[in-house]
Amino acid sequence: MSGFDEREKAQEAKFAHDAQLQFKAEARRNKLLALWAADLMSHVNPDAYVGEVIASDFEEAGDDDVFRKVKADLVAADQKVSDEDLRAKMNEFMASAREQVLSEV
Image 1: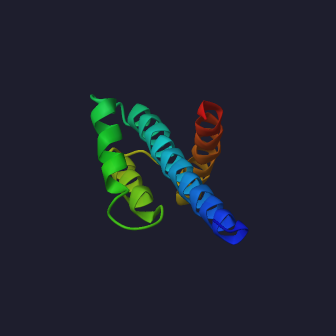
Image 2 (image 1 turned 30 degrees about the vertical axis):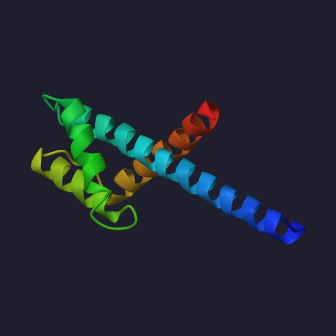
């Protein structure tokens, strides 16, 4: 195998590894966000709500599907959380989730 082929395979492996870590971090962020929102809403079954939020992330690419789900649920529960505060919470939980996932590797 040539040096070029080896570098190509190494790059492919790194890309796959990075994508897997990103997926895990997003799932962890969604869990943390759902637990936070469930607490605000005094949700009867926070674990079930975690599943709902994680499932909502598969509707479309990006974070907007999770944002809309949690925002709509907060509004329905009469919780006053601004869009900016919710986005900030999502960013905060993403940073925490990345740290957690990387510490597990």
